[in-house]
View 1: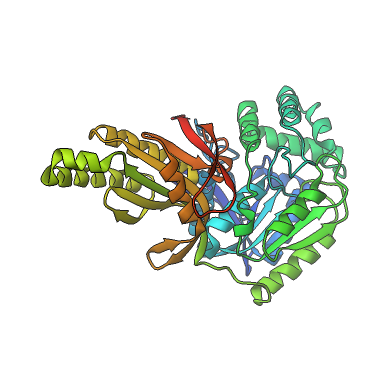
View 2: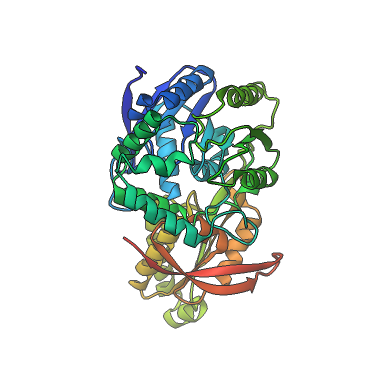
Length: 451
């Protein structure tokens, strides 16, 4: 490995990245768990895997914020912060569009990125990935939350112990030699402190991308190994392939969770075939006019009565101050104003946590003007036509806002699933029927925000 490791800024954070190979295509590799873009080359199977990836693509790798050579953070990064990092790294690498290859829990970020930025994603590859971490009624094969919590305790008790940790990961990488396992543990130890490792793993416990899967509009390859002992990936892979439109499902022999171990010839045979089809346009192209977005609707409580009380001139002045306050917060949180009707605002965001924090900031700034507002948010597929945004997600967001009580920021279950680990506390507000929208919808009130 002789490619230089460089840094780029993502907000206030420095992200370390490296580009090897020439391509086409560009490929952003997002492994699961713990890694270090420089030290990973010292693990022989990983180095061989990365060299092979760099022969079939222009390989772009980076250390997730808070890990490896990237900046440490006081707060736990959200998935949308990590999406910002992917975009920043692609920009710094001069990549307009890339195949996004996510392995294990790297699949969560990869799925969300592909759905949110189809114009930057030429294809999606998922390897031994899952739709969520913890068991649910329609994913009964996954571990319970209690089992996952116990695993966190086991990992924390052994973290950094070069004698105990290899035994912990042996079941996940049965083909690895003792030397490889010790090298893997060393890299993990140098990439994360014990607290950072557990915080990273705990944040993933509640991540759930099931609602996002049907919204992916890019060519997708789902690969899994058939005989894993630690994680039942076969049902998870089938779930992903069944819910992502047009996805290819490939079963590979072997029992190693990380992609770099095990049979590489069959893995690369299937991967290279897929990449050729993507380059030659034999699989569907991204629908850049349809994207995953979070919609926010706000309106003033008792606006009509307040207008009558103040009179036309004073109300117009207050309404202008209201508009100015909301636009300041939209600018700060990178929201995009779509429409304004009287005292109501409609805006979109590329991340639900940012949208929630913006809604709460708007609410607080309007209190200072003597105004009370309600807000509703939903994350779903939106169609972009010029500056306009439409689709069922827009209608759902508006209906959620209509149910919100004075001073309340109300969100859908999809939003809740995507802000896991963000420090945003939510209270269950029960199930509701949304006018004109099929089914029952579970809604949640924003209770508190961690700074």
